[in-house]
Amino acid sequence: MMKVCYKSIRRALKRIAMTALLAWEWLESGVTFDLSSDAVRADPYATYERLRRKDPVHYSRLAGGWVLTRYEDAQAVLLDHHRFSNMQARSDYGQDASMLDLDPPDHTRLRSLVSKAFTPRTVAQQEPRVQQIVDELLEAAGEQDHLDLIEVLAFPLPVIVIAEMIGVPTEDLEQFKEWSNAIVLSLEPARSDEQVRRFRRASEELYEYFEGIIAQRREAPKDDLISALLEAEDEGDKLSHLELLATLELLLVAGNETTRNLIGNGMLALLRNPHEMERLREDPSLLDTAIDELLRYDSPVQLDGRHLLEDVEIGGKQLWAGAQVVAAVGAANRDPAAFSNPEKLDVGREERSHISFGRGIHFCLGAPLALLEARIAFATILKKFSSIRLSAEPEYRPQVVLRGVEALWVQVEWAAELAPSAAVETHTVERDGSLLDIPSE
Ligand code: HEM
Image (cartoon, rainbow, N blue to C red; front, side, top):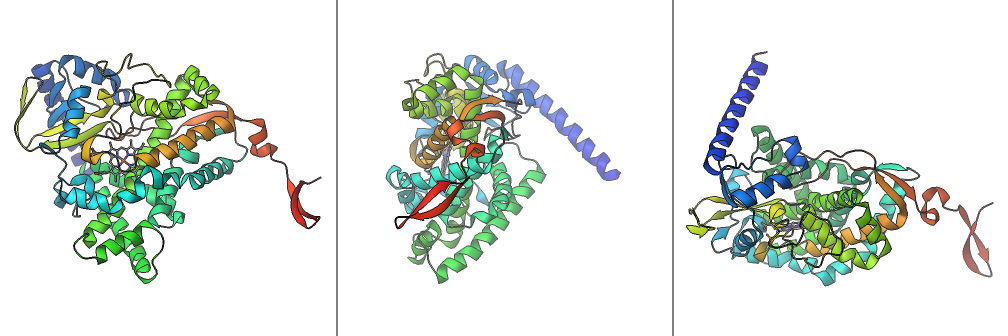
């Protein structure tokens, strides 16, 4: 009883403090940066538009940092690692830093150890396997005509692909999902004590889990990323053991929720713009521009943080060394100064310079892999389902940095020749010395 009482007093005090900060912010600039309500989470773009118009270099009292909503400013911050640093105080997490939280030269050293595995050419070799996984996942949905695309495809696909590349067993999918969900909370600007406890615990458990697999690979190396990184660790000064664990954690987590959200947000955008979906169905050569447009239109990563190493002036405002700076990727991607008619989804859009994969030295290492998975996922969905409609308004997940829906329920009609229910039962017979599959009676 006392505990409940204490908790509700704390919650009430927190709400009062938040309201006071927002009021202060509004008095200073006539606008606020607050993505916490369900309505704003469902559509943050009106908030971004207001910020960009009224105060594009905005000091958010609530987030405790500068929020940049113009394309030009956001891009400039991401490109300038000399003044805008990614270095995080990882002691906060009790773990060592991954490349994402480091500046050169450590960033360069860690990134170069894995970059070969993610070049477009290496990733292209995965194409048949990714297609097979997508086919199997959709076929496993059986004869259902009502399904959650997140559960059936968008969640498992990136986890299976990266787990196989790293060399961890995919049977542990559900466990990865839990760890991954908890660890990505570390990216959120406002974290409750409970969330901090959750991601620390998840990170510790994941490290322990990796230790087990590392021990196996030491005994018997395989053709996977863990074995390749172990070789680098053994060479001495290239990679410490903690860096090895941090790299594995980053690779396992970075591509899951982001790629899931590209498929989820992208399908949702197409479902809400059926003309664009039909355009794509009729002209599959638009697939690559369409995926860039889906990344621009509703970016899986909405905010990208840095901290400032020296005083700078941006848009007539003085930003001081040590301040937090947020490049609002989702806002920049809808800046009318960079994209014509930015609120419109246009699968044939020629302006493809979105910043959804970041910019500069931290540009998404997994971009070629994410694009391959998305291309195969969208193409296969359009091929396998002759019709697809949204069957329930989706709810957004609570995070504000990684934007995506909890579930995406759709009503589908399977294309006749591909419908699992229409699949012809066959049996194998021997004819003229060859084995043939022929339809059963
Ligand atoms: C649609 C899917 C994805 C999106 C939107 C996305 C977005 C991003 C962004 C914005 C960054 C830059 C962060 C910064 O500037 O600090 C980043 C970095 C990174 N991403 Fe992705 N990502 C996606 C998929 C993937 C995948 C599949 C992987 C595979 C392992 C991956 C691995 C990484 C890594 C390792 C980094 C850190 C790079 C560095 O610090 O040099 N990402 N990603």
